[in-house]
Length: 327
Image (cartoon, rainbow, N blue to C red; front, top):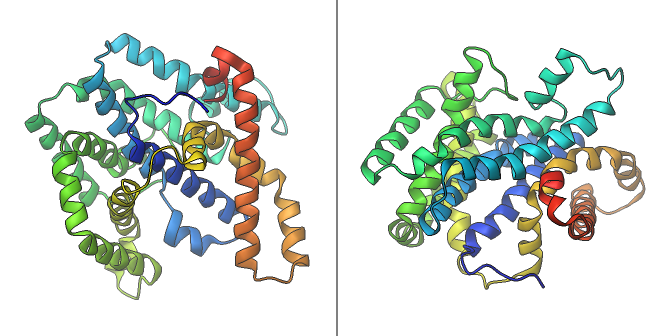
């Protein structure tokens, strides 16, 4: 059993497990042809990672203030380095591979696999993070309020990361509010936890409403154009439904703990792994007589556990190079 840090916030730690499972489900069920399921339940689950990242940045800053250079060095070693390692590995394996300017551009923009867009996107937020951690409560609330206005005013979520107007603006207008919400939640957690526990039924009702709007957009142009907005609001509701539930769980639940600890490794490799297992998935679906939803759920659970066990076995053998190489 690994030594547990006394500073570990267990519900947020467990939420990392929930986030990586949602992200993995997004890509697995997309690969298996369930676009509607993904559209209703899993789309934009990267918002969970952004919320967690914002929360942890503020949480750790409160407990042990670090300098800007040390913060950037940690992000370089633990986030950007494994991103580059996996991007190069997957890029070299592409048909027609060649080290050209276009190749490096694709690497840096996170286009070697569908999920890699998140790293260059969040890297620009990391540049501002030490300053955000040191804002007064009043100023942080104003910045968060501005990000919320941008979210409602420009509720369009482009796919992938790009450096082009207006797509880059829309991407940050859509997602930055989740990152800043993590900072706000960390600072006002006591009050917000009381509110979410007391009025959980309101959050549940809103989550149900937004899910219905996403699932059944109707004929109105307002609802049709509001898909990304309703998905984002649904993500917020899920955050504040799941977190109070996680705070009721005991500490040191092995599976959730390990999923959380290895979440970045799973993030980098899961799409390639599910793609490799795609023929096995189709073979099982064709031959098993049980409902396809159960077959695919069991397949998803088994593949995830297999990846998790591989990460648990490999990372200790890499020693201090584990995080720079695997995340």
